[in-house]
Length: 86
View 1: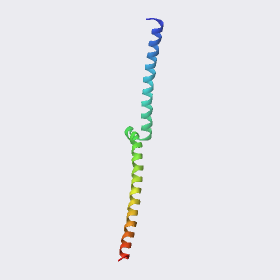
View 2: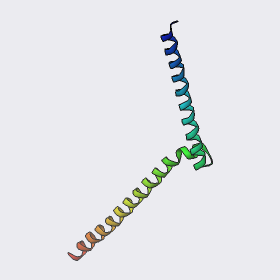
View 3: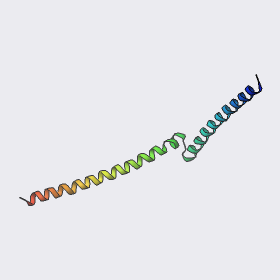
View 4: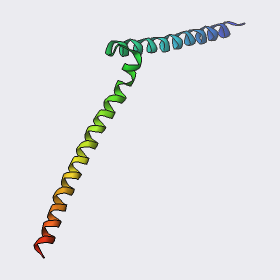
């Protein structure tokens, strides 16, 4: 094997090592972050989804309460108008 092939194989080995090391550090960092935020890794991972679901539920409840209020007002207006015309 010539000098060039040896150099390329060393570069490939170093690239594999660094890439594996990077993935390992990323996994470790995400695990440490999640466990520092919550007591359990799954809780930390799903906390974002839970927060989004809570915000969506708040907005859905607000819209439903608004619609029910609007329906109550409009229906009372319609019924009062109906009885006034009798």
